[in-house]
Length: 342
Ligand SMILES: Cc1cc2nc3c(=O)[nH]c(=O)nc-3n(C[C@H](O)[C@H](O)[C@H](O)COP(=O)(O)OP(=O)(O)OC[C@H]3O[C@@H](n4cnc5c(N)ncnc54)[C@H](O)[C@@H]3O)c2cc1C
Image (cartoon, rainbow, N blue to C red; front, side, top):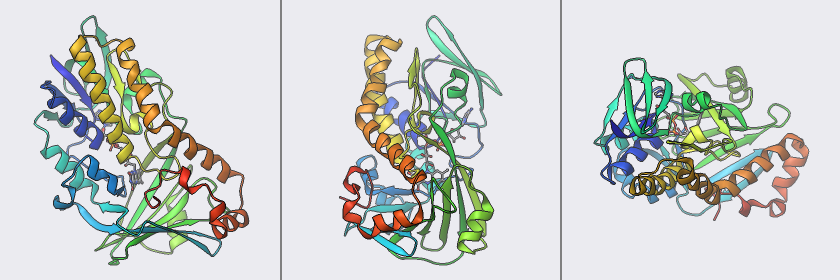
């Protein structure tokens, strides 16, 4: 019997495991794939707020480039969002996930896909494709297509798609470009990220396709990958003996698709509640419900503003958007938790 079963060895699951270990808890991490960090599915553009979680990240060897500002493009009009100092890191997500893994002492049960879960009076269990494991509490950190959430009938408001193409072009600029074209894409944008030795071209939106990405940038990527992105917090974030964290809980900025920092925030909040439940030896909903409350206090407002912006974009056209970019002082940019402002 473990104290904590963590489903999913992404950054949120691994960081949660590390926090639980610091409480002296016996943790098992279950991961369906055979290698940490793969398959790749993320740009790894993270704000320098990541230092609040990993203060020595600059020495990890995972940062490919540092960017100071973003340029938003619409209809030939550019809007520069400038922070004047490093706003975000372009990190290699595979190396990043592996580094967090190296800081965890708990066993990661690789190639263990959780298929079903069940509860007994004093524990919860998971059935994987290989074996059954038992614990006192389960943390669902299994990403945007969370098996646990699906079993429990929990889902985010919406799921959209993100696609990435990598070319061999070296790029060391200190900014990222976001391209809006509402005649092609109503609920997302295209982007270009300078990754040092390579360049990343990407797109996110509800039904985006690879041809749209290739057609927009007129590039032939050497490597292509992508994934789904949850939009809006899920309708329930806790049940008896269960907490949902990270993408499994929909902790993603709806305007940008960025989820690493919010996911780590969810892990920190979960840690407080897990500590309380082990202190009281009570894993019931009445103890765990504070998790949802605290998470909504921390990021709920920003997520709702992001949802409003997405809805606004859907009724706008390119002319309106470029007008707003031109007269950017009209935009309530300070409302947004955007890494390139403040
Ligand atoms: C194209 C794209 C670009 C993105 N770019 C950025 C970006 O630039 N910046 C940013 O902050 N965020 C970005 N994101 C979002 C970011 O990738 C996620 O928010 C982040 O990975 C969430 O971490 P997580 O640990 O919750 O989930 P994940 O990283 O998805 O990890 C979940 C883990 O659970 C495992 N798993 C799933 N189901 C099971 C199961 N049944 N049994 C066992 N294991 C299971 C998976 O294999 C995986 O390892 C992007 C997403 C996409 C799709």
